[in-house]
Amino acid sequence: MSYIDSLFNLTNKVAVVLGGTGELCSQIAFGLAKAGCEVVISGRDADKGEERVLAIEAIGGKAYFVEAEVSERGSIEALVDIVSERSGRIDILINGAGINYRNAVENITEAELQGIFEVNFNGAFRACQIFGDYFKQHDRPTSIINIGSISGLTPLSDRFIQSASKAALHNLTKNLAREWAEFDIRVNTLIPGFFPADQSTIMLDEARVLEILRRTPASRFGSPEELVGATLLLASSTASSFITGSEILVDGGFSATSI
Image (tube, rainbow, N blue to C red; front, side, top):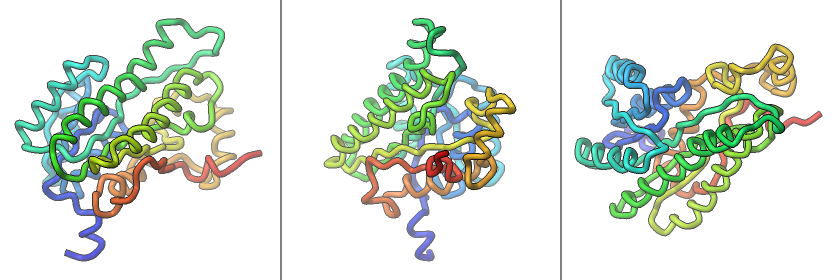
């Protein structure tokens, strides 16, 4: 095995990808499988989940789907039990479940506020807490990767709740990294910029798209496959053994620009 392979090889590791039926996280799952991981796709859409599994199996990877709902503690606890029994271990959690929609601040309802926070923050917290308890019981390096958002760093108009929920998730990452370092549990945030498959980008009008591209030094949206490299870095206990509490931006330089 080459030096580079030894840094990023994930053979015999097991990764659970919450939100793995979505466009971005499905590419992350695909990349993990290509690096040797057994990948557990988890989400609410069984049909999409099985499609993702078949795509991974088509390249010789190992994967299976487990339906789970991050808003239900029992569902996440059952997910951990199923995976630990079927696969024998869990090494990596990708916390990628999320929802979003547009609304001006003055029009936000209680239901909208609670709905987005329930998935984007509360659900992520539940998953971290439940998987974290499992990780603590096993004496090996583990990695939690929370999928954040560029809007959690730079608020976007009409995205107030999503921005706030992701900012809270970014802060949660740092707190957990501090608390769990002694257990060799690394917790980091992967922050995508603007990707055409992302639900935040799909809802943008033409004027906003042009403004985003103007502010992005790369002058384009990202491709979902471009999230894989940063994921493999954070997932590998060898390549990122001293990286925890970090925010890794994959945004084409958007966050580095101003007026």
